[in-house]
Amino acid sequence: WLHRVNRWAYYASFFLFLPLMALNLKPFLWTYGFAFTYVLAAILLIIGNRRLDNRSFAAHALHVVTQMFFGMLISCILYMAVLAIMASFFYIFGIDEPKHFYEHIAQFIFFVLAPQVCCTLVRQNEAEVEEPFKILRLILNFILSPAVIIYTVILYTYFIKIVFEWDLPKGGVAWMVMGFVTVALIGRVAQSILSQRYYDWFYNRFTLIAIPPLIMYWIGSIYRIRLYSFTESRFYLMVAGALMTLFVLMLWKKRTRKYQLMALIFGAAIILFTYIPGISAKSIGLSCQKQRLTQIISEMKLTDPKTGKLNDEIEDMRRIRQDSLLCEQYQDVTSVIDYVRHEIGTDEFEKQYISRSEERRVGKE
Image 1 (cartoon, rainbow, N blue to C red):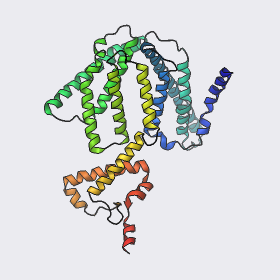
Image 2 (spheres, rainbow, N blue to C red):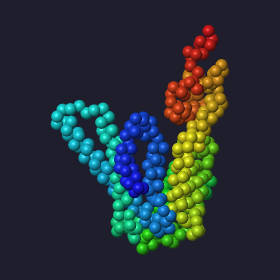
Image 3 (cartoon, rainbow, N blue to C red):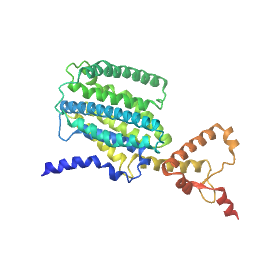
Image 4 (cartoon, rainbow, N blue to C red):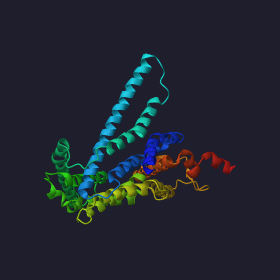
């Protein structure tokens, strides 16, 4: 009975997009939440539905990632084929293309077909992979791991430089460290299924090796968050830093070196800080920038004394342009205004913050 239910549920999943067509998902498509939905789906497939040791998990993860790659490749080829056929059809017969036609095709292929193709490929040939195929072994042993080691040397050199100069890390270093640790963790997991493990001497000591880059990461991130407060991206950056630090520490002891548990924690963090209102990165970033906006416009005396809202006219622009400090503060408040307006919408922003000159004239009369 349960087998029949599962089979019909599987067939029904092909038509899951039909009720979703009634929803307006366009505002969601260009957000961090949309991107993390795909990441979460991939993480859930990688985690699997049973407990795995490190080697079995690494083999399963390799199978899932490679099959998803081929699934996306098939979907891209299908998309290009459909585009070529339909564009030729419209051109030859002189038919006007329907509005947003190609956009709808892309949405159907990549939102509906591509996930199902990937899941179908993952489900097939799911026997445990003994070892990566030759090309992947070459990539892991002779490209990825050497690149990580070279990158380590670069980050260590920069760390020594800022220590001697007693300077703060550049803003982009945090993203560089995040990429470095992420790729290094992938290399560490891949070592579990390689027969020729040339870089155990590096990955077995990675917890200690990662300390200087992580120090730069936290110093730079905390400094800029204290200076500019949280935005959605900065909050995600902080969460990523916490996860990176935790995973690097988990590598230190064999008892805590559980790759499947790391993936589970990563997936839980995505759910917690992306989809739950109030504690999501979007909610926290908006709340922090609203507080910062109120503080900045008060300090710069940009509020209307009668309404307490932001003036829509800057009366002393010449003084601001001549004063470099005021000019920097004005650019700062402009960036915060743009962020808050983008998040809550122009109409809501004007309702909450703008005191219009017409309203002031009516008040005087």
